[in-house]
Image: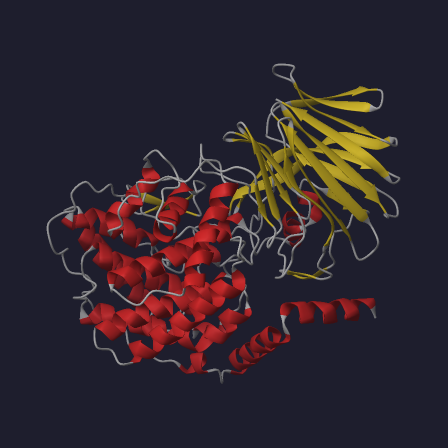
Length: 617
């Protein structure tokens, strides 16, 4: 009965209409009666792109990848010098999809032949197209020929609506957006070839029928697919394609709806994830760039204010020194519309572009790779810079950021208007400049073995307290938790000359309580974890920067020592006896589909108490 009650509450929290949309879609696809299952199309013959019009772009800085090789998810090397890749071969496993000639809807969501389907999808997102288009625009005609050859090869081996690369509406949407941006770079938006028009039209026909399903996800599927319908539809309409007007109207309507619904007034996004937040920003940026290019009517003032707030959210959570930030929330390796050689985990280009577009200001006073974006899309560099990021409370999404000097502390607390993808409540990151001292685990893979799936999404992979070896919320499915937590006690951010303070707590569905108080001063941070209501044990974990650590026990105080220089990083003590304190090996995944070992300090207590952690630098 308890399980049924949890399911019932979760369905209500997800939204009965959304659950109905998903059920109807899945039934329609399973039976083959859904309109998207009945699509048919012919392979366009090309050519798709002509040599760039106009003189080579002066002063532009093009990406250098995808000549001899490229990177998927920021780390997975793919050779590119010997012609187009095999579009249905997983570069991760070396296995080929068995559904390459099947209608997309007959292929399993988790193709057993290839394991994780995302590496196949990644090549077909057309990231390589932007790098080649940039170099072609700068006068390298061999790159235009390569772009054309790769695109023709892709459509021949991925005929309309057959194979894994037509399976997901969002993947089709990302291709549309990349094609549109490449056409803009090459100066061929207004003079697109008939073959390119047909290619875009085939994609929009795939996206439009599943828009309701995308909306039901309450995440980036809805924003991405609405963006593709708006961009692709308005493009088609400008070229005289009758269907384009309806697609553009639908895309605009859902873009307005999704941004207002999914982005809070403080910029928090429904997915509670740094990387998915960047994906949202990148999507909104290409929409705005496209709207300006075609001189289309502006979006609403609330839409623009939410986009501006979302840019500021990401600006506050990342390091201005490295562009990296907490590995918080789900991370599927997405990084779209790349126009610079900045590394995957450098979020500054996206922040800089979004801030310039939606606030009219510069996110960073100095120039760098992040500012190269603007040369390619006709946006002027802002002359006014925003102040450096400081303390920040995004209460809509449950994020608190404390800053003093070079130190940044980020704390997660429960504000779940939308479904959480990880049981990471009261997780805490600590950064010193570009160095992530205490860190999150990441995601690893959406199609990993069951133990890895449980680990990376579960409470045990975060810097928080775990009660009785269970997750903070009951797990109902691969991507779903029940009994969403609520903040029981909140201390707002307070700052004085001595320190900055914040605190938050919760009570879970089984009566266990955890309250975390954080005090940050110039030379360190102090954390007090009050725990009670558990049955057998509570385990506090600190996930450490990988290096050689050692533990020293001095009475009731445990010290963590750097073995190389003998410096003490942190001390842990408790108001009641510490039952166990040891260094164990955990895992972290800073890039999708890659995991590496990381040292984890575990502190276990067996009765209600306060645990004190002090970190000094």
